[in-house]
Image (tube, rainbow, N blue to C red; front, side):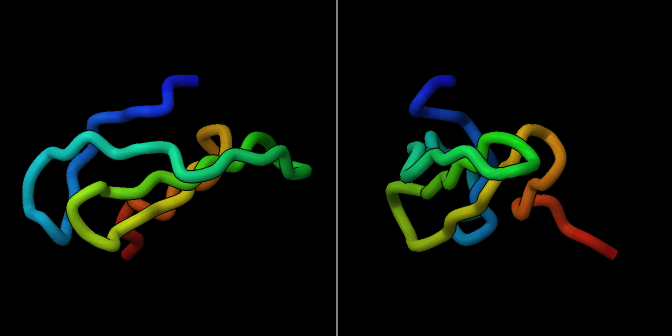
Length: 57
């Protein structure tokens, strides 16, 4: 997995290159924490099962 990823930052309001802050294996897959280098926004993805950057209704 790459240590950089292009992603929309809701705080900055533009596409940013997020960096991988941490990665660990959990019982449902690989948990990866991503952070924007320009602000404090971060999110977590777990093998396509969980994505905290996606809005929920």
